[in-house]
Image (cartoon, rainbow, N blue to C red; front, side, top):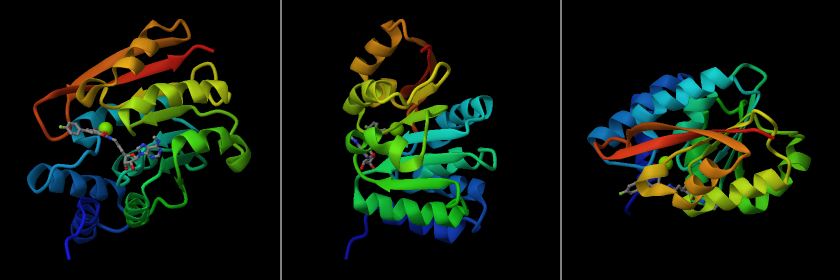
Length: 214
Ligand SMILES: CNc1ncnc2c1ncn2[C@@H]1O[C@H](/C=C/CNC(=O)c2cc(-c3ccc(F)cc3)cc(O)c2O)[C@@H](O)[C@H]1O
Ligand SMILES: [Mg+2]
């Protein structure tokens, strides 16, 4: 019977990556997606920008919206300080199951809390459920038409503090026009665009980094 793309990505990790070595997991997925089968991971080029932001922010608390196969989850968690926590939300059970195994292979399960559910349902519960005050860094990479409503929801739920960083993937391709318009014109954010390319292609894409001003 036919496997799914996430299942094929996991197989590539288990075949080519070293258990407990997050960078080898990242490399195995990038090799597979560049040479065998494209997939919507943030990828190696935008991944380097993600790495630099994570390193600069050195966050104690991270929220990721849209785990998919766990590529960016592993990439971010591999750079976090020992006490730091990453919560990642994924509502597709199949994708969540694959991501858990990718995260386990990387040896990062103790740093990552994968919550199987929809961002709209879970954002209002994160404080009480996980004892989170605010997030130092949020990585947005889920359905593109949900970036704006979920950002407003995070504001309303008091999950952002002065200095919290939002990093959004795909602001050009597929594009998040309503989010960009809001975040670039709001007096409550200072934004910066990092021009790059759509993962594993020559098409333009980029990341938008926004600081919440309180
Ligand atoms: C809405 N609330 C939500 N709560 C929890 N999880 C959610 C979610 N929305 C989506 N998800 C999950 O995130 C993932 C979805 C990601 C959506 N990403 C994209 O559509 C995307 C798409 C492209 C893309 C670009 C060009 C192209 F030709 C085709 C695709 C590139 C990317 O980098 C992308 O991130 C899935 O695993 C889905 O189940
Ligand atoms: Mg993306």
